[in-house]
Length: 379
Ligand SMILES: [Mg+2]
View 1: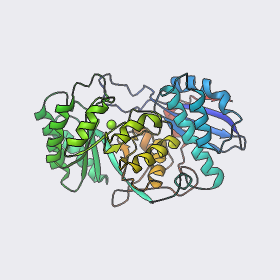
View 2 (view 1 turned 45 degrees about the vertical axis):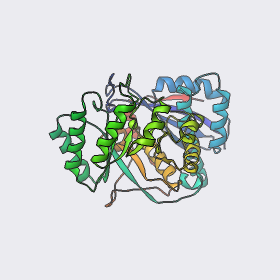
View 3 (view 1 turned 60 degrees about the vertical axis):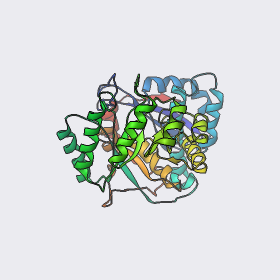
């Protein structure tokens, strides 16, 4: 079975805010779907956390290496793409685009063999996983508390709060937000805090992070994410060693090789590769197993689309130590692209599909609505 066509589909119109200093608009396109179609008419779907303009430029570069290639050998084909693009776009937009192709090829392999992706990734350790609702900090505290209580009512048992000015004003404001959250949801809900250190010109360094980590510990916060700038590996090594809460980071890294020093040096307790940027499921799986061998937990960064979420579900199925998947909310691209929206069970878990491929059925009408019918074909 050969690759006959690759398609990119931009998502726009309902792009959720990111908490960034230079905030995006709903009409901005930062998420792009990829479809890979085989010469037998099977279609796999993937997702890329970058714009269709960059994806299309990358696909122009990659087209000759993809068309006519095997449609059912995701890891070899993705590795070939990594190896032949050493001089162009490596680690950036090209790696992001390869991520979507890789996820689509895993979906295709699953559909061609009648197996769920989790089994093909090595085997199924679990049939469900707890999603954490991923939301932005907001002010004032009263409406923030109300929003968090709404998430608990929807069935979420874990919530991560991030960005939204945390760490950018003063310690009292930060603690007010965290205290508000804990008092709003009670002690039974797992809470995490994401400082958003990959935001532009993040001002805080090690001492701030350590002091804040102690405050978060006092309120029972499960992990402290991106407390430092994304390249400050020495700061993270110190922080992980001295902080009383778990430290997580690495959502912006791409390629498995970039993770080696972070894992080998135990710079984090929890590493957060994003399969829609890092190189796809092939790369995420290898990072997760390397992390496992060093006693570092992997929790996928899933700040993207329902396709990214389903890819994360299958990686979680195939890892012995998986604990959570990220679930951005509210986001139309998470809740309203598939025929059936993801549903939490009574314990706040998502069931991992056992149907072929990712087990995800996109609704063509909804995809057309959120892409304004734009499709770019490479064949
Ligand atoms: Mg984050």
